[in-house]
Length: 318
Image (cartoon, rainbow, N blue to C red; front, side):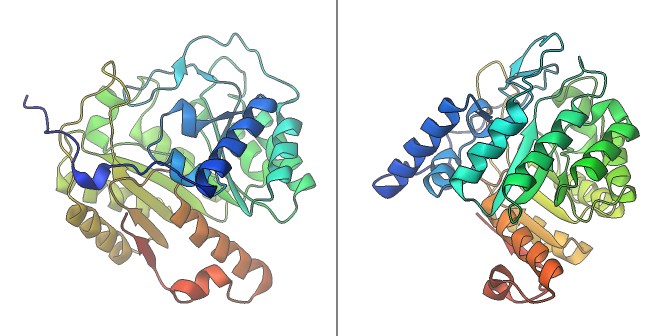
C-alpha cells in the first residue's frame, strides 16, 4: 500500500488569535470547571479552534470512556463498569445556559455496560437543558444502543431533541474493518428509521471518506441513507488521530466533495455539508437546522434561512 503524501493545503488548520483565542480559552475553562467533556477534544477534531473560537462546542456525556473500539476514533476505550455521574445532566444544562448558545450538539460514548445503553441519561440531559434554556435547540448525536428500539424511543420521546443524529461513519463495505465489531451498517440504518417512526422531526448522519472507498460506494451509501429518510448528511475527510488508528488511503480533492454535495442535493437531502474539514457536528449544518426549526416553530422564515434563500436545498463546501 502506498501512503498518501503529506496533508494538502486545504487541510491546514488556522490557529485562533485575538478574540477567538480568548473565547477558546474561556470555553475550555468552563468545561474544566464543570468537569464536562467535549468530543472536540476527545476525538481531536481539526475544527476545535475555529468552533471554540466562535463560542460553539459539542458536549460529550456519559463519561470519557467508550465501551467500543472503532479504528478511526481516539476517544478512550475501556470498561466504565456501569458508572454514571448523576450530576452530569444538571451540570451540562447549567454550563450551556451560562454560554447563551442557540444550538448545541449533545453526543455520547457508547455504553454497552448500561442496561439501556445510556438512553435515559441522554433523555434526562436534554430535558434539563431545555428546562434551563427553552429556546436552545438540541441535537443528540447518539450510538446505536445495541439496536434496541425501546432505547431509541426513550431518546426521541422522553428527551424530545430537535434533531436525532446517528452516524453510519463509512460505506457498507468498510464497516467491519473500520468500526467496532458490535456496529453495523444495517443496525445504524435501523436506528435512524426507528427514530423517524418514533417521531423524530429531523434525522442526520455522517460519512467519512479517504479510507479506501470508491466514488460509487459513497454515492450508493448516500442513496441508502436517503431511502431511510435521513434529512441531513455531512461528509468529511478522515484524518488519522494517531499511528494506532486506521491509515488514510487518500486525501479527497475538494472538487470531489463538491460532486457529493451536488449528488446529495439531487437525491433530495434537505441539507448536505460536504468538504475536507466537515465533521458530523459542523457549524454550517447547525446553522441551517436552527433556521429550519425556527421556521417550523413560528411559521416565518428565520434569519438563517434568509441568508441562503428560503426552503432552498443548501450545501457547504469547506
